[in-house]
Length: 155
Length: 99
Image (cartoon, rainbow over all chains, first blue to last red; front, side, top):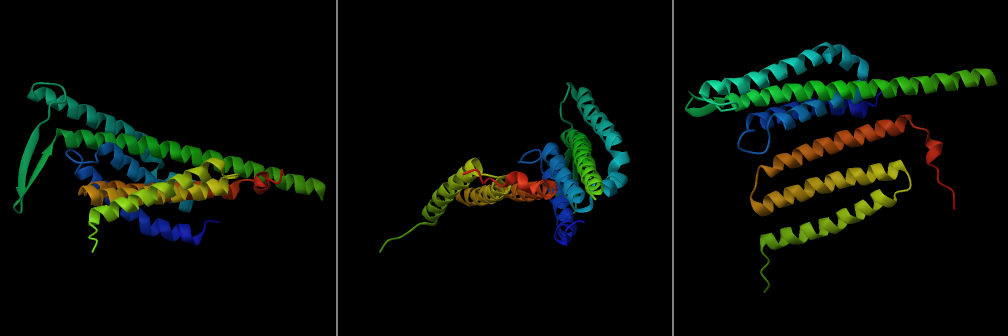
């Protein structure tokens, strides 16, 4: 049985953590932040869900997306690196400037590369967090069954 | 009349927090069982948040505040994971009545 405190913390904190991750991702190039730490932050949000709801619902919700996410992220990162070849070198940055509502926004291949890194980090980290949680739950269930059998033998 | 600058106050606070953080690390090292070490870990995470926030104020680096937020979140999640681990563990293994 999961504590109500943890469930409330999950419901309140998970959106906040995801918003912080998006902020970290968006300002990554010139300031602290970027794809790796944003991916780890999203993984922390999903880990909070694993703690609050158990591994099984989270596996049902995210499990089938994890490995394709890693592949998609690798594809995105490598294609961002290869797009630089068009500019004259591997990993050369290509920048596009938009101006929306007076604010100037620069989007380029570094953002694309960060997006790929973020997807890879989310997929890998959530995969091993789920595996570790499932292994520990399996083990504690085994121990619990063993104790019950022992009690039956004693009775 | 002694005039105390704001930076001096921040320095004093940082020094006090450093001593307190050292005491927490001592508890983390000698703590006889995992619950003590978990509380020490949680306190160390809170100290890290406080020190990062004070340092951000001291050096006018507002982007360090994000590091403080991330440290707070990860400290909370880490404490939750340790608490979940201890919830399933055998409590009588930790009773150290050896002396």
